[in-house]
Image 1: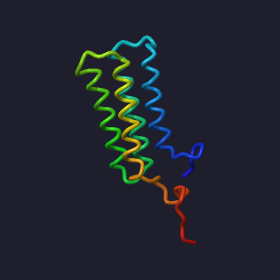
Image 2: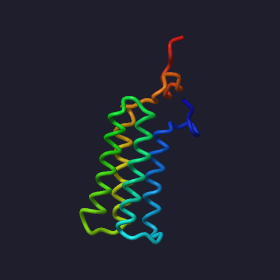
Image 3: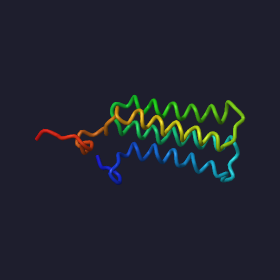
Length: 121
């Protein structure tokens, strides 16, 4: 598995999801409902791709589920600003990435070893 600038694709996908959520905070002309759909949809799609790229799938799938549900609840369950929805999504993704990072590996066995580990030849 190739890395992107020395990082795993799953990390980049989660970061991209959080960054797109951040863009919503700049009031780019979206209604509360549109912003909610955008943040929740992007979280779900990019999270599913990231889950497909990691093993075991469960930690990344859990991260995706929590971030998507939190965004959807913030957008559709309560009357909140798009900035709040994006902030909730970004904060959850950041915290959950740190928690689950040590529990997942790239899905391909030929991926480079993590820093600080050695492989038997």
